[in-house]
Length: 163
Length: 359
Image (cartoon, rainbow over all chains, first blue to last red; front, side):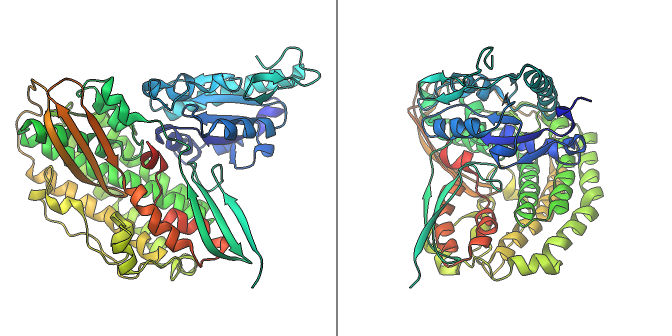
């Protein structure tokens, strides 16, 4: 196992999900799937987290919250979009208060489709994210500061970017 | 008088899987006022009726909430069937009832786990969710979906369950019953649980009534309202009594849900005994013309789907009033006067489902 893959911590935010994917993420932590045996812990503090797991799509009320959590996480960090709503908007893409997938706001590294995404695919997504995390660490990738005007505020060593 | 300070609680908070924002106004450790803000997960799905045909919209209705998904779908199709005057096959009614009770059990076990977690009982959280997987396995085996089943349709249900599987399901539930008993024993009799729950967040019978509490929040305050008693689906042919606790505190609301698990097993067993043979769906032609207020009992309380059609494939209006939304005014009352450290427990004691409430 690599250095970072030993105990990656995740932070979960429900953007505008129906709860279906959220309870499946929690199901991953509980005895049936038990990802905690790999040292994966669900934390509430963005500064503690390596992996940002987002469910649901973007709307006007949660834009700032998502940006805030993303900007507060320290590098290296990866974003996993769980469920079809987080990937593209899903069945709600035509709703007036749904702006689309999470990648319209922050750089997404792994997409986990499904409605609701199954625990197996969520675990697969997190494991894929670990590889991305390790790569980012080796390449010293600095993630951009995201604001409402897109990913403009790059850090000084932003060459390579997050995507 | 000491100085007042305001503490924001949420939308991203470790105890809440969902975004709910409360501004807590404190005087020292006492909460003196609470200002709730909602709207973080609003999607605006009611307006989608204009873009989806009424038969397709069942899928959207199910996705109002991923926890009570089956019952949302069922309430919606029951409304459509009432407008169109459809008498759906009896076997379909029984199957809907069985799946409803499975949904209730999975929701209550999920909540009991989260509730224990809010008090810091990690192992009880894990055990509740371990038992919940048994329920999800049965749901997946019979419908194909773990949390979103997609099994209701206008005119019946999509899948049938074989008699062998039905017997196996009841045996399975009776098999985990002693484990459920042991777990509920912790919730109801453990001394530290009682210390955290008894006398905390008391909602009086009057307050519960006048503030419009529904479901376990109301039944925990001694109000015996349970929409299942109106006899929709197959509930009219089943004997059961709503679980009511008089005290109105967090313990009472927890006890209501804990005891309802066993009521659900009883209902499922009665359904399996009484279920008739026959088809599970019928052909549906035409489109709904008229309006109907469809009501059902969700794990969190009474849900209302208002449906209005004008004889075209697309409905004119769909409006949902969810149990969590009506339980927010009682929640604000509950929180006033409590200590800051009790806020997570009290917030969770109404079983907030923000996905439902904001849609």
